[in-house]
Image (tube, rainbow, N blue to C red):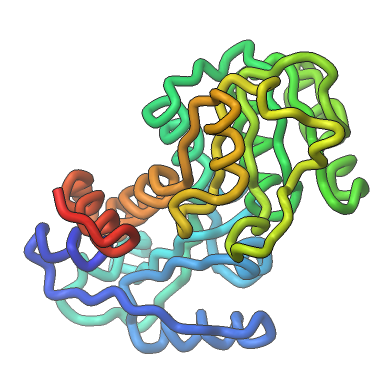
Length: 278
């Protein structure tokens, strides 16, 4: 996806993957800065850890409490910090600037893929970890009427609920399952990545027929058991491909300063994930 986008923009750049242990994250960021990388993406479990490891935080990272995109910047002669791509010669002073592109990708994907109106909606969210917390905060900011949080360890859900009540007091937050129907149910856990995984929900406490739409942040496999059972119950369903696409497109725009070629990136993503063209 990113390499297709960079090629379409005519950039002599390359996007590659590195496996980094959490204990080595700070060293990896320092190394990338020393080697004058344009930027980085971070995935779990690095997004929250990176908050304390970058030199500057964009408002998006401060608002949602996680960093998934880093842009390396140099200090110009006028002391202003500018993206490294704007320098002909590498500056002596380089900093890591942290952003969050996940949060805005969530409502965009939900609206485009499921046609959900979030304002005033009742939402059931499974998971209160990194992805779940960001999703919960972003949904609250969209003005959902009621948010039900279900997590394996209730303490995490309680903490997220407390934060939402402080920042968006108009949103009703309940830790636990709803009794009535919800407009949207979301899986923000990792359950479903493996075929043998159980459902993220307790079937005795939640029936899919009680959700109008169902979203799984997992995109590989394309249809998890969670989505398969929701579809069978008559729900409108979507996986996390759209969220992956839009967070990546925004990251590319942060690095390049240009609009991302979203259609090209989507085709590359679908070909890679699902093996299809078009």
